[in-house]
Image (cartoon, rainbow, N blue to C red; front, top):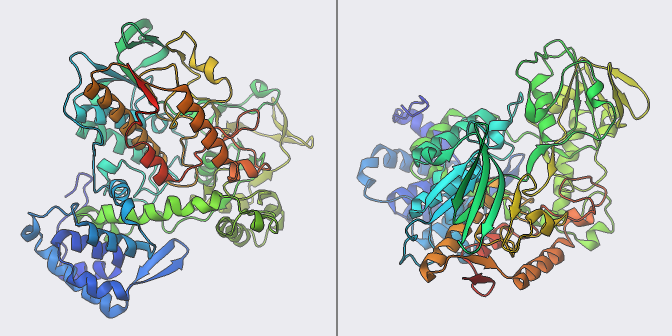
Length: 638
């Protein structure tokens, strides 16, 4: 049995063969070659493999006879796994790996990409890029602020390198956003097979998209497995960071158990997300409402919404999940929309089939190859969808490139199929901007169905005011309500919740004002030994997931610290010239992105001046390569 009680024993040969006949042939073939090191079957089957486009993406297909050959080989190999125990299935030779990676989707994969793809798939872990001839000096310490995904990754990386590390977490538990958000239906909208640490690929997901509680459980299991729980100090609300240049260390001021404390560390990794402060709509009367009202990130567990007339303000990914989860419980649901989003159809069945679950958990390297196939599909393959094609855009109003139009057509098809009998809802829910202008949303499975429910009303005119009885829309109509949930997101601010004082006495807020820029998305001149994991222009908004950026920046931070150890220095700081070059490159690359070109979309990616300050304009692979190790020409070591 597995840790979660699933049966891991080998099924009978007939059942096993049936499961292998239903498996993704490219992933299965790659796994069997990884287990055995034998390439004869691979060489025979790869020429027969073709790739079909379907609703869930690209599907590799073998002719029935070839699939049968593969299944028979799989039964033989899996029935004799102990015979292959001496071989590491994650250490396949480059030539075979390259051929099998290309076969996953039928796309070209370059040899230069192998280190990047091996890491993203989980074949490589904690790969050093700076020499390891010196350990951290006696007494050197690292402070990590936040115990969500980034903080856990940083603590694990520090422990792996033997660096003393303390994690300060304001909440009583780890998980960050997954600890804070407890609303009904909360879940991850990045596919579960990818949304995990590459060094801890999780084969035990039960659903294509994990629920929030399931993901929180994963983070807790990882933290315990890598023995970093004892490094986390909970209920520690950091208020201030001050750099002492003479001592080459940071002073961390926090509140814990009602008392002010000061701690010191030679380096700091900020592991707080950029969406932490809840935001309510700027309309009068919010606090006049007589019923219960609250933000989705501050869910009232004591508030029973069953049988209530519920108002939900906002139509982003959180709102979509809440509406999907609560429609059957409430007496009525009124959805207040400021601007519609592109909503993509559900990606297949929510729960993974039994055969897939068994293969992921029990076939060595199957989870890694499956993760790589998914990653190739949801990462830089999507990059052209956010790049502006002037010739295309000149003749298309709602798409900016041919691939962007593919996303547009998917969204339109889902909308029109869902509301074929409700043209009024099609009119209200059709966005007037190109896909990716706002963050695309995935239908959890019943969102559009919920909006068609007779007890649902979609208000698209906006809000005028909140009154004791309910909400008055922009057209002056009162919508009587018993409870209101504001799924209106967060204020986009980078570390504004803390006072961070740098080398020259200026604070980070003063330096950034409302136009934050950080070299490589994580370093700022004047702030030595400070690494930012959720910085400006660091989010790969065209694909992937938050886990990608987290791991890339944490790796970079560790390599920067190791550079200090190797050189006997105590401070690393990016130069103003390097910062300026980065800022200019970001500006130039963003110029032809959907976020700059598509001005019709209201999005938190921009600041009050309309500048894009969140999205990374680079391909994920290019950003990963930038962060392999510090460029010594761009930093000052002292």
